[in-house]
Image: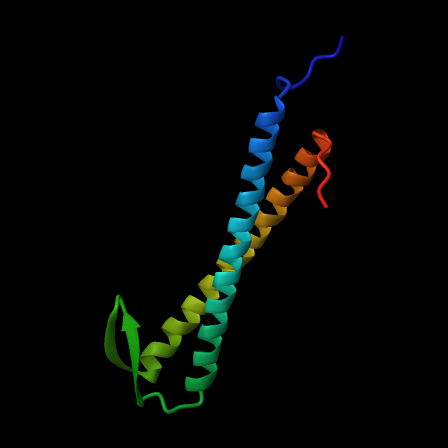
Length: 115
């Protein structure tokens, strides 16, 4: 007699868990897409203002308020934000891969075939 690690799930429970896992993957993928768009915007701004004189004035949106700064003040903050967003994307991609592996294992365990 073999013992299983968990109780046998009903078809409805399998379907519910399948949909939850699928939705979780879609949510992570959507967030990755949003952050990739944001990192591209930061990169475009960085590339545009990098060659400018550091004392040149520019404007930055901070908490919904447009504030006047200089290029030398804004550029490091933009670069820090850009790098932070890239790190967040890397973490989300790693999380996605892990969740995807769990999802595939769940599908195999419950003999779920998708087309």
